[in-house]
Amino acid sequence: MDTTTLPALLNVDDPMLRLAVAAHLARYKGQSRAHTASDLNAYLRWCLERDVMPLQAQRAHVELYLRWLQEIRHLRPSTVSRRLSVLATFYRTCVIDQILDHSPAEFVRRPHVPLESPTLGLSHLQFEAILTAGRDSANLNDFALVAMLGLLGLRIFEATGTDVQALGEARGHRVLSVHGKGDKTAVVPLPPAVGRAIDRAVEDRVDGPILLNRRGRRMDRHAATRRLRALARSANVTTARMHPHMLRHTFVTTMLDAGVDLRDVQVAARHADPRTTMRYDRARNNLDRHPNYILAAFMASAT
Image (cartoon, rainbow, N blue to C red; front, side, top):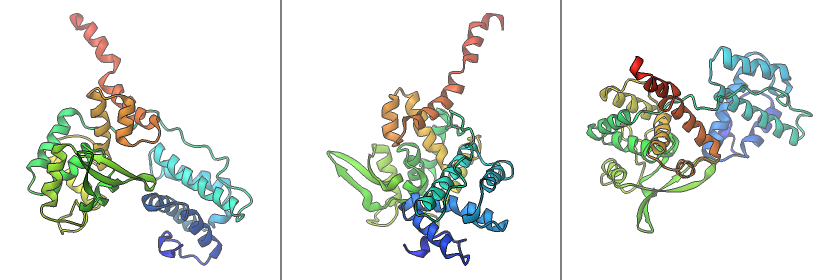
């Protein structure tokens, strides 16, 4: 495995640790490898800053790392759970490769992750306002960005990583080939409005990235976040700090509001587990269909 794929922090003089990390990351491809390396790097940094050798860590060290994520970094339970999962899998690989006798993460308790998603999508009117702001923006990439995230439900790395060459046709539909999670390629149909938004951004280019930053280079997630926040301000959308996943969440909840079957929404969002889609649905129901509204309407004559 090319050592350039190892976490940047891993420059310690421990060949066994380097081998263990390389062997673990070799199990993944593409964005999955990058995300795993990022989460693993956070743990390695925490260990080395405290003079703890990761291959000599005990269960207590892993527990302290989780407490640090929760109480010092104030990360959400879902993020802490994901990082623990990466860590547990890494140590399991070390046991399989006979680098360790047992995993120090084996009996660590996972944090409770709420059934509903902590992220709330935009309301219908807010989503319309963001779309209008993107369409009217002088930056042609803005409308394409909002359309790809909010109307196609792409993940941010999928939207920014997609090239012009991925546009095509299939069985009478204009489509976009997307390289998604798990190194899987999905063919996504383009509604006319999304196709027009992408065409405006692409103009007469025949290759290269669809979404460009202000310097004419491939847009990354940081630039995308800045553009979305600027659009939210211009659209007077007052909500929590805008970020790309909020539009993917809006894609799911707006479909559900439109009456699309939950199974069809799962397919469109490319969720491997239907419970992921249901978490979005619960968050939507908790507010839009809360029993408080029914009670208030029933007692309207007295209030």
